[in-house]
Amino acid sequence: MKPRPGRLPFARRIPLMPEPVGMVLNVLVVSAAIVLVRVAWLGAVVFRRRRKGLCVKCGYPIEASAPRCPECGSAYPASAVQSRA
Image 1 (tube, one colour):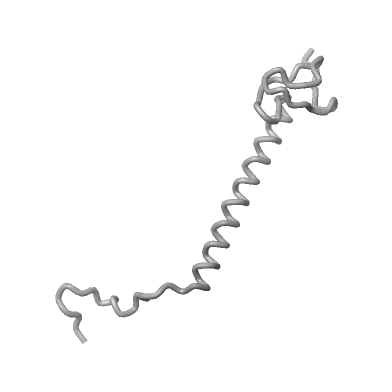
Image 2 (cartoon, helix red, strand yellow):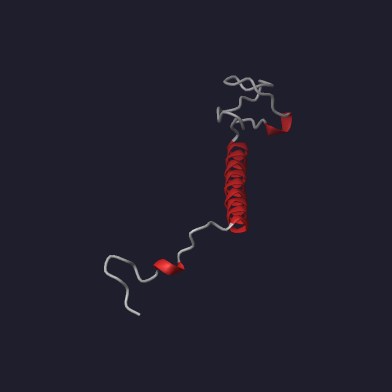
């Protein structure tokens, strides 16, 4: 069977109605992937800031004497403060 001029040969195989189950699964998989990437990214940012001795919220250098970040005011545990001598 030859395709008619102006028609694509695979036009019969393209579904005209969306598959609801497939759409729901697709949305769930893509949403889960986005959430996992975001959580991993934020975890890496927090890990890097703690390792470098920066405030976890804003990235400002933590001073050894202050119980709070001088830039954003967030409190941090005493174990997070690293003295830079």
